[in-house]
Each structure stands twice: as C-alpha cells, then as structure tokens.
Amino acid sequence: MKARTRILGGVAAIGLLCALGVLAMYRHELRQEIQSIAVKMRSAPYSWIAMIGLLVLTSIPPFIGFTFCASLTGFIYGVPRGFPIAITGAFLGAMTCFRLIRQYKITRFIQLSSSKQEKYLAIQEAIEQGGLGIMLLIRLSPIPWPITNMMLSALPKVTLRQFTITALISSFKLCLEVWVGSQLADIANPDLPDSAHRVAVMTMMASVVILIAVAYWLYRLTMQRVQGIRTSSPSGRSLDDEERSVATLALPTQKAD
Image (tube, rainbow, N blue to C red; front, side, top):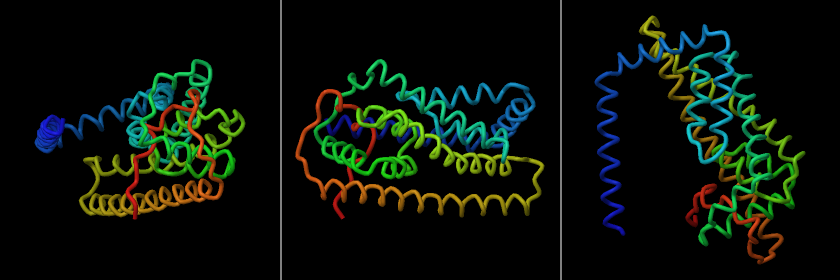
C-alpha cells in the first residue's frame, strides 16, 4: 500500500511539474486569453447570473472549485462590483446545500472514519453548547465553505434560523477572495506600467502572507474553543447514524503541540 502511495505521489508530482512547465512556457498567451475572456464576460449583460450559478453549484460537496470561482468573480468584475455577486452565490449555495442534505439525507452515504469521530463529536457538542457564537467562528475559519455547509447541515441540532444567520454573516468573508482576484486581474493587465505592476505584485504577496497568517490563527482559535467546550462538558457518547456525516472531509487531524 505504501509503495502504491509513493508511486501515485510521484506521478502526481511529475504531472504537477509538467503543468507548471507548460504554464511557464505559455504564460503570456494564457494571460492574454484569460484577460480577453474576462473582458467579454464583464461586458455581457447577464454573465453575473452564470457566475452566481457556479458559486451555488460549487458550494455543495462533492463539487469542487468554490474558491477558484470566488477569486474568478473578483478577476472578472473587480471591486466592488464582484462583492454582491460572490456574497449572493455563497449564501444561496449554503442554503441549497442545507435543503438538499436535510431533505434527502445525503450524508448517510458518507462513512465516518474512526480517527475523525472524536473531533467531529467535539465540534457537534461545541455547537450545541456555544450556539451561534461557535457556529459563526467555525464559519469564519479557513475550513472550506462547502465543507462547513455540509458539516453544519448534517448536525440535527442546528436549526434553519441558526444556519441562515451564520451563512449570511460569514458569506461576507468572500470579499477577501474577490479582492485577491481583482489584484490578479491588475497583475495580468498587459497595459499596466512596469512600476505599477511591481507594486501590484508586492501588495498581492504581502496580502496573501497576512491572510494565511490570520487564517491559521483563526483556525487554531476555533479548534481551541471547540476543545475547551468539549473538555468542560465530557459526555463520552458515540455518534448515531444520523450524525455520522462529513467528518472524514471536514477537518484534518492535528498533531499534538
């Protein structure tokens, strides 16, 4: 099994290097093509509806690409025009995910690994005791948006009102990804002077570093809060069939400090 994992990892690494090589060779052509597509979509009268649809679709696991679509919104529509598009798409996607999971109980098809059960149970108990506060903290953490949609939708104790409020408030965090996309558009602009291009690149790099640091801090804060609530109210119970949902996808297992 380990040998197979190494082989797959090696193949993936080679594929990634080849893809990066192709991107490096044709970066100017790709940049011009992306810029051309962005200009066409920006001028199309109803393209924002299609973008909202993409955001809604990628908000529902197992579909992927939500972060890319949010950044693409900023790349195409810029700031502040991209803000309402991303916020609307994220919120509608969250509510759609909630409806699908509650009505059709999709999570019963996803198995919960034993290594993740304890952490998922801790999050569930923290939400039950912390209410909106801990739910909002989890929503604002860097856990992927589709994963938090599925995880919170699968918890039977989470009400529609709680889910709606936290989804609406936390959807505004998409403004950061829209802003990043708008900065990428500035960098990709061939008409941008060299000095302005250098400033845009430096601003972009500094902002990404800050965002990563803040995201890491917020994630650690969330996990500490969850563990604190879990420790203060030990229950030792196991998950029932309805609660056995998305922990295998939601949170990576942390190593002890």
